[in-house]
Image 1 (cartoon, rainbow, N blue to C red):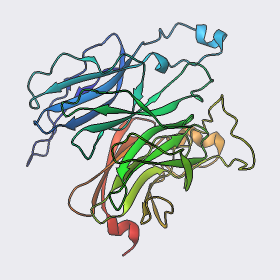
Image 2 (cartoon, helix red, strand yellow):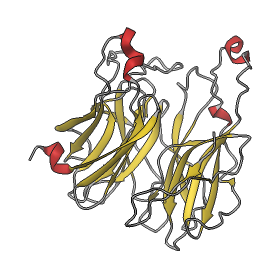
Image 3 (cartoon, helix red, strand yellow):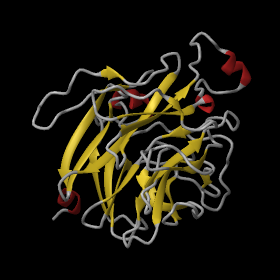
Length: 322
């Protein structure tokens, strides 16, 4: 896989011809993140991992997984403007890591990039754990990675400010496919609490949180999970993969994600149910959400088993029912 980019210019109705952006075609390049720093430069961060030969079946004999995520490194490149030359892609830092969500701007003008370590040990990614990587105003890292304590199995961190601006919140996908998890962090992102479950279900698929201009907190996610016995310790070592990635839902919270009284299903797939019909529904996954005008919500997600990217625009009041 390689990463391509296209632009929809203001006032136009057609996207430009896609151009190759990533620079290591011999690798599997994925999970692109775009953000702009104060100097106007556009930055791209993505993963690049060893691509396994499809004829290599050693992973089956070794009890491993086909994916080579544990070989991934984070790559960085930037440009002064879309359509101009990109800088040479370099490793963001020397240790293996994975990313999903773009960095958020900290109180001092620096950035906080949520990342996670994907390890070969522990079966199907059951030992993955989360960290935060500080980035300077130039988009390059400074200082050490900040671990999220006891975050094994909690990945794809999505960072948003608390409603009163006194802290940061981070929400995670769960490898146990039980619930979305929540951690509270200091404003500088240097300390994080142990992630705790919130009422929203999670199917070991990605999610994204967004603080809205109204003050409410939005979450886009798959409204499905595997029910586990809360009296038992989590059976770490092997992740759960129900692979039911529908419906795709949007929830709103007025208490920083402790409760979610407003939930609406945005896409329910093709309406088939039952395990034998699973493949007919396709999957609705890897959602992202942005706010345009106040209350105007823009959602995009992979549709029908990654056949296409679907886009939806709706208003906050469509979820509130007012």
